[in-house]
Image (cartoon, rainbow, N blue to C red; front, side, top):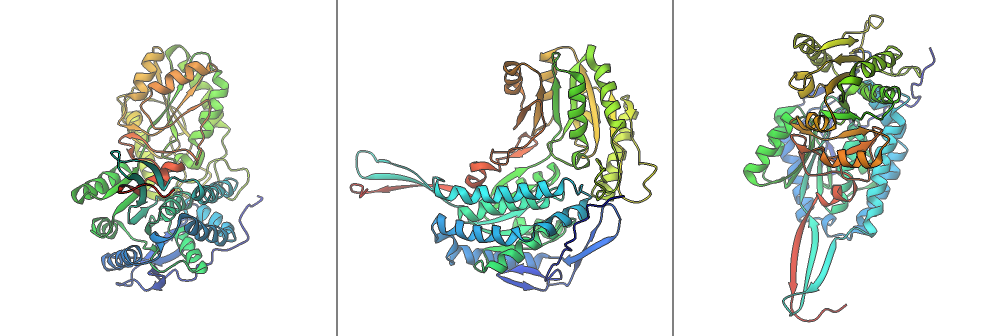
Length: 494
């Protein structure tokens, strides 16, 4: 078997320490977090575990850097120059970032360079906005006297919490937007995937970023909750589960802290009657096996007319039969393992629930027999799924696809919207006008036409239980700012 294993090993300088106030410090209680490999089931790294005292120290550092330090008082172009240096320092460590993602969650070696590259492109996009972003939005006459200015200022100390499924791309997007806006930042990576945040912190240290501007605390849930509750935190940006989002929203609501929440999804793909079922089957299969289905926006519900249901199911099953499941370092592999043992067990529980509720299991549904080690699940297809079933309503976060039959286009839209989530959706049709019509009717944050894709330069987020606010694009910077109105007496000098 040929291997795509990167030759560059991951080399962390201080995995046993936390990065707080520009220095690597030992955790207060000396705890450690073990990082597991999804495909070997072996410990691949051990990093420091932050507890409540460490969280408080990080907030003190970030607070001081914001209240007293130079960072929020720099011109946006100056902050962009620091981000440019950060980009250069991370560029040389891209091979390590690629390796980290493969090792930690079992991401495919053929895909990882593109995903890490996407994170780097988002960082570059943010840097490029410094010259044109409207930090001073308007200058207008004020009540016939003097001048009014509407300006955007940094929100303050921002906690950025990234999930385990795309730890670099999501974390660097948050960090870049917050830093350009003038915030100071505390990175809180998922305990399952802390390596990327360590590399970002090491890059910040290497370029001499002012102390306290960027901090790193890896932890488990209790310490993270303590961090979010700290009154010195002005803004929390979380990408994670809806359960975690509700907790963060409630804590921030109690003290009126700002929050951006990008949460779960149960995204629907509506296949209209004019679209080729073979083409749809290829795209839908490729989508549900992407990152083993561990993508918040993945198209996990397929909605199709009743008279075309069986034909589409047959076409998808044929595509799934050709999916190669295996070692993520094998260039022929199309579906790697799930990231975590508990996630594999969760997916298998949903498969059992789907069958128990009366859905028809057409393909997969178990662990591949040829793989004795690793958190693998076969690509799985359910047919004749009712919109009231758990597999149609709840986020599974695995390679499980449900096909729901409907009467017509209006019924398809109703089925798509019959969800607590509203993060993403797609319409498959050759009629552009119909695609636009259906997209406008879907209650979801992003809708694509005939494909599953992301544009990191556009705002991303969801309706309903899929979150609050938007990340990415210009809106991703705006979410780390506050509006201020300034009324000046006398005529403008410009």
